[in-house]
Amino acid sequence: MPRTPTTPAPTRRFLLRTLGRTAALGALGALAGCGVPSAYVEPGDRAVPDVSATDRRLVWANWPLYIDTDDDNPAERPTLEAFEKRTGISVDYIEEINDNDEYFGKISPSLMNRRQTGRDLIVVSDHMCARYVRLGWVQEMDRSRQPHVTRHLDPLLRSPAFDPGRRFTVPYQSGITGIAYHRRRLGREIRQVSDLWASDLKGRVTLLSGVDEAFALLMQGNGVDITRWTADDFHTVCDQVERQVRRGQIRRFTGNDYTKDLVSGDVLACQAYSGDVIQLQADDPDIRFVVPEEGAELWSDSLMIPNRARHKANAERLIDYYYEPEVAARLAAWVNYICPVPAARDVLAGSKDEETAALAENPLIFPDADLRRRLAVARNIAPGERREFTKRWNAIVGM
Image (cartoon, rainbow, N blue to C red; front, top):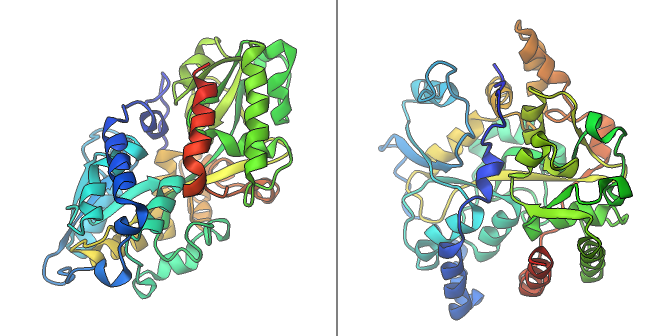
């Protein structure tokens, strides 16, 4: 059964940006001091003997609120418990990832120094996956152990720029960065990114504060192909946003606390994540989510096996389990993000529960053909660009 919160739920994306970055900054400083070449791990030095056959367990680090739980007992995780019962593999499930950068800071010393992290499986977002893959800090998966991934992975997600062919990563859940707005309070529709700059929204708009989360949608508003954007495209967006800040159009830059502003009415339109809006709509159907006519960014949080993980085969088996359509459907019904397994749609459609069956028709969980044509996975900010671009963007956010 999908959740129907009576107040804005503290979603996984809310937790994404609520904690500080001290640990992350320390780790990034260490990398800068060592230099990326010394941090890179060669393929031959990424694995240790796999003890999966004799040690039937694994350790999985994930975000809070990112797996199905029993309605009456939140400590029970039905899909995970079913996997343990079927396979005999015990899973130590740890909800310890609250911020991409913070978690990078936590485990990067071990990965950089060729030590075990104590984790067999982790879940991080696209832009951070790119960093792990580039540094050689994750292992290539054996697809012969993952027939369901091979068969069912959504074609839109099969070959991102940071991991062509998905050799090192497998999407766990996906989402869209688009625009949320309150239709009744605004009194009109929003169809384009440029609609955010209309005079009737002055001081009632928020944008996401993180450069990785914000830039792609704004570029798409300029007609940019975000799979191959340039530095000029980035600075054009920054110039536009800076002008809107100066004229008072933008109320503030936010993490996922934009949900509070939207519910209270302090904000009428904002950059938003699709999964959050599905949950908000349970209480207020006047809250709408739109993929602009120019398009929107499709992103994923992906499963990866860190270097020197001791239970690689067990982790690969768990990943494949979550690509079985019946399992993927159960998970999608709970988290309400885009399911990376399109075949799960038919499973939900056949549910005897009307509310659950209705999720199969929700384009924010299973995008239809028209919506899919307007979605794109953005090229990540490259290492040589990051310092300059982050400095420019943060200066605007701090205005």
